[in-house]
Amino acid sequence: MKNNSVQLIGTLTRDIELSKNSKGNSFVRFTLACTRDNKPFTDFINCIAFGDLANDICNHGDKDTGFCIVGNLRTSSYEKDGKKQYSTNVVVESFELLND
Image (cartoon, rainbow, N blue to C red; front, side, top):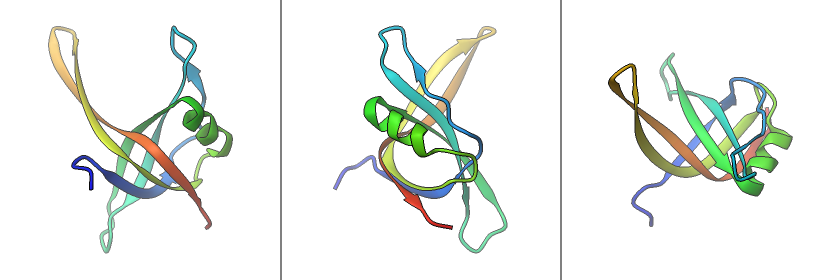
């Protein structure tokens, strides 16, 4: 079992657009809306996928599409206006489309 593993079930908050970095590698960023069990709350989880997986997600990823994703958490930091900012994303390793 991996120490850093995440599984999420949710729906896409918007259509996904494929992007390419300066080296020409494909990636997608998207947000998955995940409703908490037995609670009227929704968490919005930032996700990113790379390469062929990014292409596959983009081809199936329309707003409100249900996904089950498996991945790992990645944290990063950057400076904005002289203040350190932190972000957490799920790096997608695999996904499954869910039927409504």
